[in-house]
Length: 129
Image 1 (cartoon, helix red, strand yellow):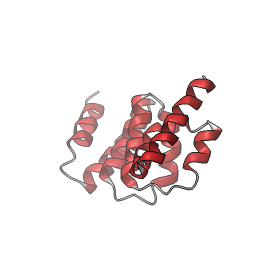
Image 2: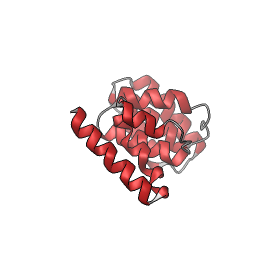
Image 3: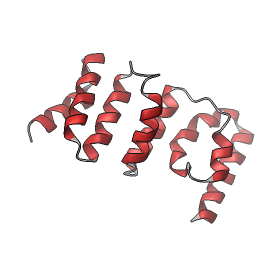
Image 4: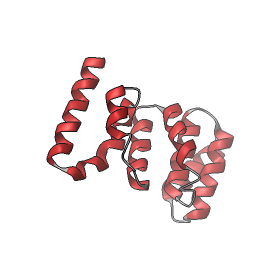
């Protein structure tokens, strides 16, 4: 496992050295966060909301809900006005069968953006179980 992770990180470092804008894709690789080499690579970078959304979305796709919630716990205060971030938080809780918490975050998401169809559909689905 570690050999494959190291190879992936070497590829990331190589790509960044050729195109500095590639750092914006690093959060999507956050599932490597336990790897020391990856930690060094991202330690001095300051990611914005879009990069964090990508990282959280990727973690949810890999069914890493607890890890996604760890990140969300760190950034939710800073980006509390993000409807999509609140939606993803609800999704993580829903995936963990914590429906009450999920409903709360879906409701906040809709309050922030009444046109957030993903949050509205997820909320309707949970309420109609």
